[in-house]
Length: 194
Image 1: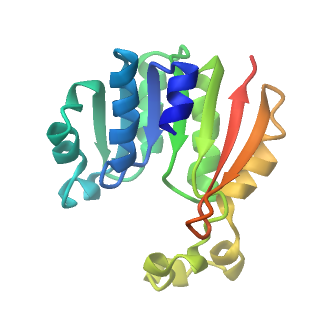
Image 2: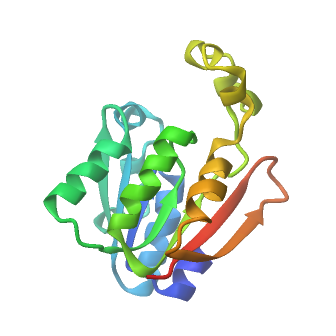
Image 3: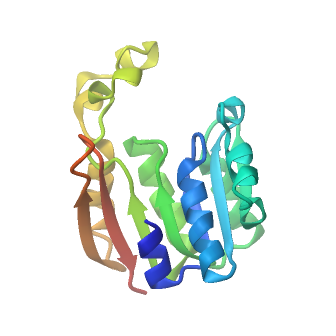
């Protein structure tokens, strides 16, 4: 991802989902190498207590100044609404989505991001073929067990990519990248054309 950021000289980046903050550190490192910029990253309040957490990692690496962190009680969707409410104009040139992983959150996030993404900007969707049933840490959680089987076994990020993003008239230059070293780890790229 850092190569992609450096090649495109992205300076204003939105990240949805950061967990410990490792990806944020890579993004902020690229921003630092470019000579400045800003990363806006959003995740759940529950990740604040991870060890290590995002603030510790960024501070230890000297990258904290490049990142605005938002911890939300339920979802990044509400924070995106607040951003649009404060200023609906496009401002991000790159968005990395690594949260939600379901049709509802990711699909709605795409339409909200579209309002905030500059023409020529890119989106990367992480975990394209992730599904609840193929992720051991989630598979046996009570809320997952209550889901209909089709929702548990369906790679929902791929559904968003295929049915919403690729069919959107303002997006193109689609590509996918499979990580050979990690099962079910792949990215989907889309560029906002206008």
